[in-house]
Amino acid sequence: MDKNGVDMALIGLPSEYSKAGNSIARDAAAGTPENEMTLSILFKQLRHIRRTAQIPLILLNNLNDIAEFGIESYCRKCVECGIDGVIIPDLSFDDYHKRVRIVAERYGLLVMMFVTPDMSDEKIELIDKHTSGFICMAIPTAETDEQRNNVPNRRDFFKKIKDMKLTNSLIAYFDVTTKSNFQMACEYASGAIVSNGFMELLTEERDAELATKKLIQKLKKYKASLSNKQKEAVPGQPLFVP
Image (cartoon, rainbow, N blue to C red; front, side, top):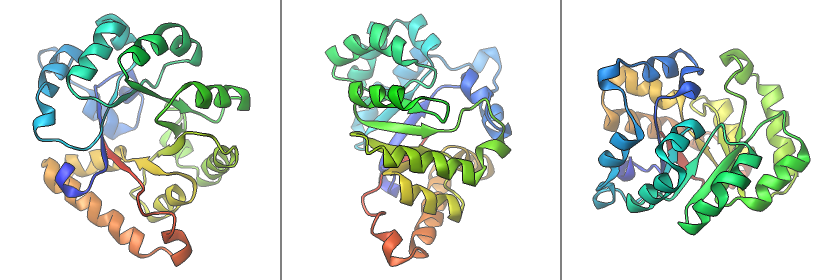
């Protein structure tokens, strides 16, 4: 991913969040006990990742897994492995403020949070004020694929967040592997997390490097088709591939 033009990499574990996603995500999350991934195994695999990877690395884990591992131990291991920040999808602002913030700040670990359509403006502003890195705009994973891909509703939500002029950069968490979605990400966000689209390519190709190259080629093609005004927003936008 590093050498193929991905700006940041998102590294996650199979969890209840991925199992609640679409069929591709559920298939990826499914596993037998003997090949089940844990945080301990993940950190062992990431121990020497900085020998080869130069791009920023973000972990995505749910709060239960982190709490079971130990919040202090988790933050320490992240720093030891060269992880730049974490996304915790089920982390409420109250839990962040009471349980995570002080420990994460002590280790210099960025904690990025999701904002969703059901959040009040006040809660979104609190998240913006007390976190750093970026804010991840997401449609709740409990909704169906059809609802998540409802473009008018998603556009309204993204526009609302952009118009709030928050301090942190905005990252869109949805499938940008269609031209219309790519254009929407360019219009309302500073970057996008490519999730299901990459997983589908990986399932088809069975080769991470080939899947990454195909994804980058597709997005470059979409970028080339943008108008000059749209292109002005694109340079420098980060692309996350989990």
